[in-house]
Length: 215
Image 1 (tube, rainbow, N blue to C red):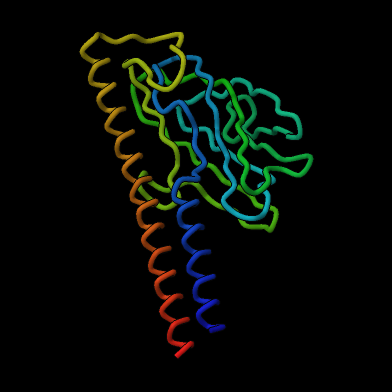
Image 2 (spheres, rainbow, N blue to C red; image 1 turned 180 degrees about the vertical axis):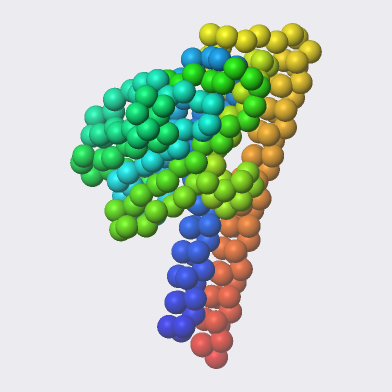
């Protein structure tokens, strides 16, 4: 009976950790912006563990010019690279971001002149010493955020100061965004379905074991 209980506890723990980590990524928004725009970017930092996040470092992509940041109570901001900022670090002066919470940090940067795709590598520091590197390609376990620099209208933030597009381009961009949202919703539904199936199987195994012990 003790072995069965340990198995169920392990199964449930792994299940919920998987379901949580599948969606809790460090992200930078917006995902699209116009060339040369003075954009307000926001990095969102969720906590995946039962220990607090105490520091976050973001690498500024090549071609992006970091301008300024919005102060956040309880956090100290430092930059490296002089006038041409290469990295930005938010370090907690208090408890940091606790388990089950997230924090957002905003900053202004100017986009490159040409259309391109920029990747935001981020490094999340936990109180227990672990460093999670969000620097993988799209679709990997630890993906970095990507911003498409394009003249097409943006879909997840206010209009930029520069850039415009015709109606046909806007329609195509909206279709792409809808497709991405559908894919994200599909992944979330799959995770929930697998979680329910795992829970049912665990309960069936428990009842079967209890009936066997009664005999």
